[in-house]
Image 1 (cartoon, helix red, strand yellow):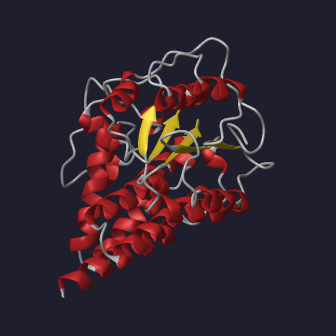
Image 2 (image 1 turned 120 degrees about the vertical axis):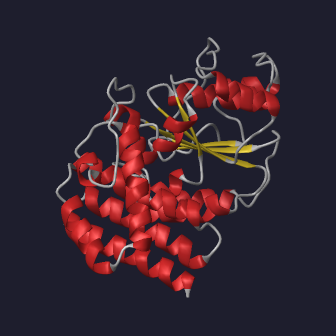
Image 3 (image 1 turned 180 degrees about the vertical axis):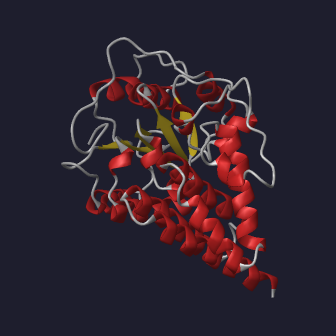
Length: 308
């Protein structure tokens, strides 16, 4: 019973400073989320610091809370590591069971999932169930260096903190679909920005400019709900010839936009789940055109069903 279930990751002897100012602000103002994704090489250090500051605001290092965190035996912190290559569903089910019980000593219970990108499909789906309605005393922290490998539905339920990045503009934050890893894949500071118009939508998906891809994905989402099906199939065929990274961005964006547009209905959540699965299928080298056709048809049918 310590920081983690498998393995030991005690606090270092020298207290680390918080790497991102916004994280400290969240703690200072008590505007806590119940689920965080910490992305980047410093995510483990940030998680340790977050928990210590949460349990002991001055981080004194001498009180019972600090000493138990430092020694790795705090009863209200659980740290999950991959079992082999993956985090398995049994590990998440174990967390679900422990989530039934309130913290013993601290004001919160914290579950930390190391290398969250290694969650198996079954484990990720199981995690979604508890992320949808966690107990008020529980905080999840998902640590990753490959944010783009997480299911969009998992990302959408968490507050994303990118280690080492501060003062992210609102436009860029939105263009990342809550996934700052896209800023490492595409360019964000182009001197000659791509100007999207009605005639160059397909060309936009050959670009590496994040904002251009963001605007183009919004346009595709709009078309998926308004164009005739025959034109959507032509659009899918043309888009399927885009680069792999651009297609992955498009699929994640469609899932994000659909989740944003319909967070209340069961059908909307189910469609977001299906779009997220298509993103995963694309990463497993499924046929891009077939996936696009299926996704666009589902978006079209859902919208027209709501309209009737």
